[in-house]
Image (cartoon, rainbow, N blue to C red):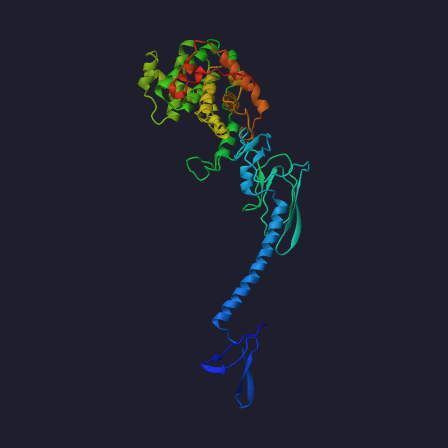
Length: 456
């Protein structure tokens, strides 16, 4: 230890040693209680200058130790990560789902796959082996996942995720291990409810359960195809198409919600599937189904006198009320159904739809209401086909991993349905023009004036 002149040391107000050296403690002579002489060790007290010097030296030692630890951590990060986050943002990257080259985007421009923060080499192994180094004991864990992985090393030696060997398999799941940023899985689909999770108006916490319930009930609440041949000798599918076309015009004039129109058509088909209806009373069934749907969906439904008026007074108010009772009893008062429009809203969100895609999809889906042949498809299938056609029309990629995840339909399953939807649209008689006139208006973007091709 360095020897520095201390000057004098004062202990308890008394001078212990007038001259001494730091590092060489002095001794104070005193007596015990019995009067025997003894020597007490007196530690040197440094001055302020000496305290500052020792503190500075200690800081230098700490800095050297810290730099060594940071170097070790950097070596760990360099071994496990390939590029910094800034480099990953600025550079071009290949989408892991469709291999499309993107630049400075957080999501693939073609398939909307989220951008991986660190790209790992894809190998053919179907498992991930993780060696977890814990603080108290070391243990080996073998965990199997079906997913494509994103990996960022924590770098802290006491972290349980220190030292990993990863083999990413090809199938995706959504999973996260580290609570901060150590290990996670890159899913080829986007979590469309993440930004709305805390918004009570969006019901993001329950939306997956809601649509799972819709998918379970849509077949039971849909009409079986071909019911006209068995149940309705007096009417045919052309009369049904004329009735629905007229109701689309009525719905537009009252400026009602889209769900009202789809529920109206559903009630008509379900009632016709159970009860035989004569030709003069078909319009009565249609307008009463419209009345039931408006009562169920609208805040301010039209009054009965307005409905009598649009029927040109062909039916009285009492006839409308009696038919309402007959229809509701026949349907067992079950008017809560998953419509194609309910699925369409979800699928448009999953497809990151812009305004034009929304208009085209609604135009296509509204056109399926008049087609009797489209009853053989489920509402979710028709909604998915409408989104498929709209994306193709706007020169977006026809299908995406996000859409496949939320619709549970692959592109190969939807493509023939989309072709048949466009074929039915092309075969629609010119006299059924309510949908076309509706979407020729400025507020609907004049979508009906555009040619929609089926070249997919």
